[in-house]
Image (cartoon, rainbow, N blue to C red; front, side, top):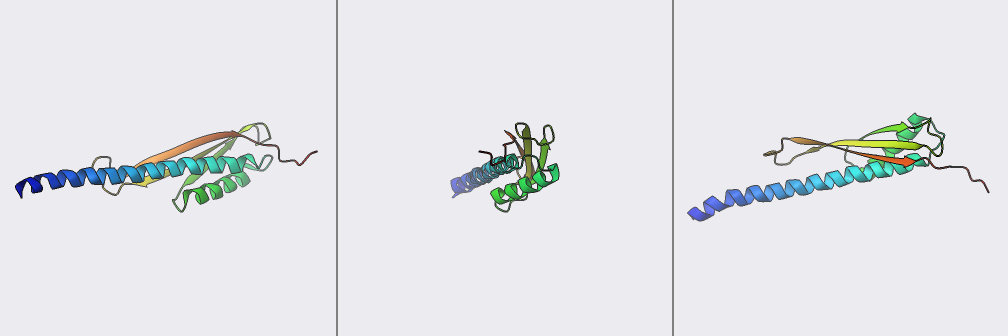
Length: 123
C-alpha cells in the first residue's frame, strides 16, 4: 500500500505530461498546416489588394485550423504581383491542461513564403 502511494503521484505526473505534450504537438502541427493553406490561397490571388489576400488567407487558415483561433498576417513583395513572394504568418496561443512545468500557455507561430502565381488563362 505504501509503495502504491509513492508510485501513483509520479505515474500520474508522467501521464499528464505525455497528454499535454501530445496536445501541444497537435496544436503546433495545426498552426503549420494553417500557415501552409493560407499561403497557398494567397498565391492564387496575384494582383489583388493586400486586404483581399489577407481575408482569403485568414479564411483558409481558419478552415485548416478546425476551429482553433488563429491570427494571420500577410506581407507581399512588390505589390503582390505574379512572380514575387507572399509571406503568411499564423500565430496561436496553446493553453496547457496541466500547467505544472511550462506555465499556462505557450505562444506558437509558423511562417510560410511562396511565390505568387500567374492567374491569367492565356493560351
